[in-house]
Image (cartoon, rainbow, N blue to C red; front, side):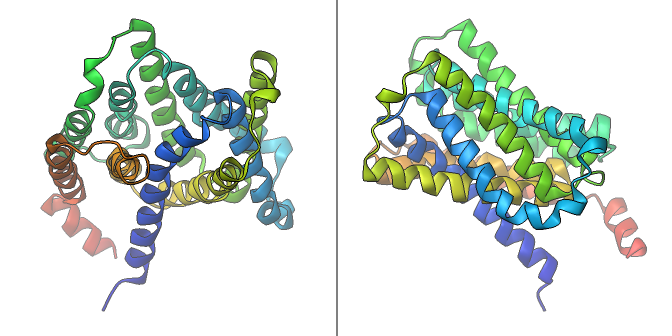
Length: 300
């Protein structure tokens, strides 16, 4: 008989990697009709407002006076720095190379979770994290053909580090705040910051409010931002942060497949080689040492 908790986790993981995977080609498409910072701010702010529908009935769980620093720190790490550095950095590096560096995040989460959350680190997990990053690197090898900018590399590293620290911070503070309020407020705060930044540096007249752009904006705001981040918080708060993050190695692969299908970009042999390494990495990270497995069985 299937474990309902595992079935739910599998569904949430599948939804997350698919939505965050197709986000990249959809965002690339949307940027044909909008400047980057304004688009980032719009999709985040709109996604946060949609989450308010679910958050407001839980007003008694907000406790803003006590917990406001958590919302702001999460917004800085997970939204402002992650999306902001990413948006700017893509102007300095080939997309493939930039994506490879950003998806150093699961490896960093594994290390940070071991140091600050006390999560176990064993040979299979370490090997899996390294294999996953290698798989993403192979998938994105095409990006290495372009101009390499130190500024771009630093911005990509900053994006990866901020996302990794934000993930660990969400896990560490998950028992102190309501998940829906944290997800809602950190997105609204971050979205407002990027929206104001875009308004000051870009032109609203450059936004083409046609049907394809509007539908893309709504889809990303609802499924990628609102539901995607709520899904991510649920998984991180209830499970092993480093294990959950390992599945994000699948995101650039889905992104490339989506780009091939909808944007007619080429699929190469390196994609299939990378997929094999990523699948192996997930298997390795999911394998628990015998001692730990026995301990869990005794505890249950």
